[in-house]
Image 1 (cartoon, rainbow, N blue to C red):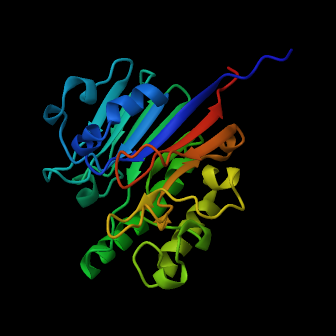
Image 2: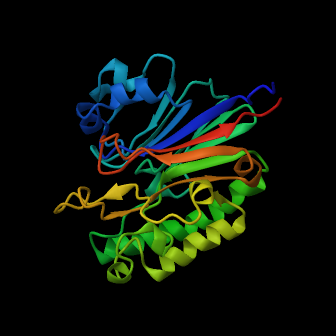
Length: 265
């Protein structure tokens, strides 16, 4: 009987505040699901503001990249492996001050937690989002040129296709589903990045990862798929499964969990 290949799991989760997520059962969820690598966005706290079991869960090596503004944005990575190096930021001063990216290099593998700005609150914020996207395009291309197996997880604040949003016609003029945002995401994929969740579920609509807190959006499943796990081509070939854990209930986002075959080396 053939031996089943060893696998590892990567989870991406926008917490909408780690303190709020903990009140909703974050630690219990982590112990239950036990991802090998958890990449988080919108931490909205500093490590000293949470209990030890949240700040540094047993069995994980943790690094937070906090925003200078208190209670805002921020990213973090919890990994069962010991990283060789941690690298913060994307090389854009104002975005790095908001803690919008953190990278861990673990042997041959690189993991990046990324949080794109939202543009929904004002035209000024939308222009700031476009500026980030312009910079991130060259940054993402540079990551590919490194030639390393790499996974970039996060809240991209963009629903890529009509299958990724509950009401595409009614949202065409809304931030997160603007034609130029969707085209930008297509260009990112054309570089060589793989949206591995969609590749595992190519024909399925209604697979959302975020729901507005207004009205009964979650109850009625009126959602958007804003959270993506992008990989380099070599890792895309090793994906075994991908799911959205809609039952987690930790924030207005749901965790996206991808299982990959480990390297044979």
